[in-house]
Length: 153
Image (tube, rainbow, N blue to C red; front, side, top):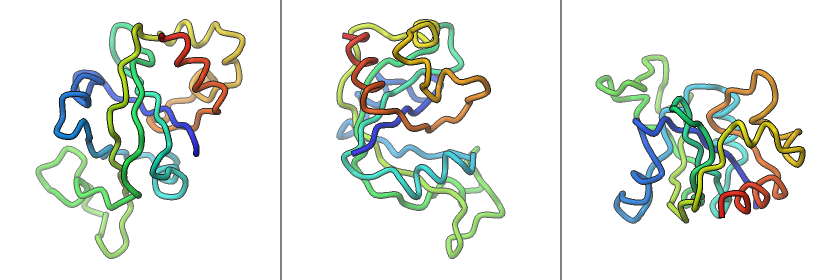
C-alpha cells in the first residue's frame, strides 16, 4: 500500500463534494502534468490512501482522507471537445492521460493548513513542502500520512 496527496481547488471539487457524490466516489481526472500522470498510471493501486488537499483557496491544506477504488484507466475527459481537459493530441489507441477513482473515507475534524505542514519538523522532507513542488498528485510516506491525520483529528 502506498500513500498519496491529491490537490483540488475546493471550488472545483471539495472534500464535501466527494462525500456527497454517488457512492462517495469520483473519478480523479483532468491531470495534465506528466509526472503526476505517471504516478497515476504506474504507481497508484486500489487500496492506496489519499490525503485530500484543498489548494488555491484562502487557507490551503489537508482536509480529508480518501482511498483509491479503481485501477488506472483512460481519462475520458481528454477526448471530449467540450471538456476543459480536452487534449486534441491524445488518442485512445495511444493515450496520454490517465485517471483513477477515489472514494471518500473521512473529513478531518480540522484542516491541517499548509503553513502548519511547512513548519512541522516531522514533515520537513515531505514533497509538498519542498520548494517548487506543485504537483497535483504526489507521494506521501506512511509516517507523513499518519502524522498529518493525527494533526487533523
